[in-house]
Amino acid sequence: MSTPVALTIAGSDSSGGAGIQADLKTFAALGVYGASVLTALTAQNTRGVTGVHLVPPDFVTAQIDAVFDDLDVGAVKIGMVAQAPIADAIAASLARWRPRHVVLDPVMVATSGARLLPEDAIDALRRRLIPQATLITPNLPEAAALLDEPIAISDKAIAAQGLRLLAQGCPAVLIKGGHGQGADSTDYLITSATSIPLPSPRIDTKNTHGTGCSLSSAVAAGLAKGESLEAAVRNAKAFISGAIAAADRFTVGHGHGPVHHLHRYY
Image 1: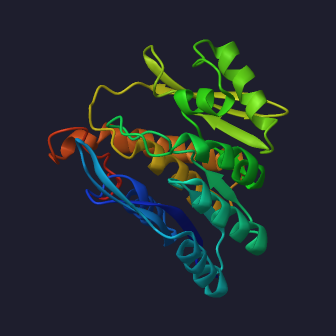
Image 2: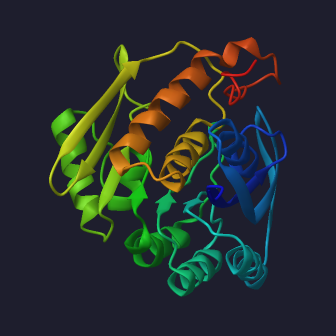
């Protein structure tokens, strides 16, 4: 039997809670071998981002080529692309290597509030990366930003935004409801045929650093293992709910601490 492999293309989080580090922890927790391509180095901790050092686009391409030339990649997760030229480099590489599954998390703002994607790069996401994605996983503010619309509040408005995101070229959208209100945090898996609400109890904790990164990488892990899209999303939702629920076992930093990726093991 071959070992399932997932590749994360994202930025590095020096505090270890989000980005590449969160993705690799998630892959390992779910029994998938993780490979990585760095798009940026960030100087950050649980309180915020203090610096970003971009990786040259041609070296992003070199990393991707090195991985695909040797490893049988079952799924790709894309997180922080940092700037338009890097998004273009990733898109060109995906078109060349044609991975079976691509999960795109349109990372725009960190949990701390730091902006991670300039305006000119959002158009590159729309034009070059979304059409190559199996699934995109925006939260409510990111979905609104991709559409240049106000943040959706009602279930009907969220479903409508999901359909408009599908029109940008991807077959499925998972709109994450963590920024919503109410006792439940409800995500919505939307395709042209259906809209599936995925509620879970909202957990009272400030330790949510890396939540979005980890959810998208958990979906990629499921797809790499051969799960259907719906099964991968449901299993990823259960995984991240457990990671958030266990986050307060950690005492890490003085701001928004990390979720507990290995909560099933210690």
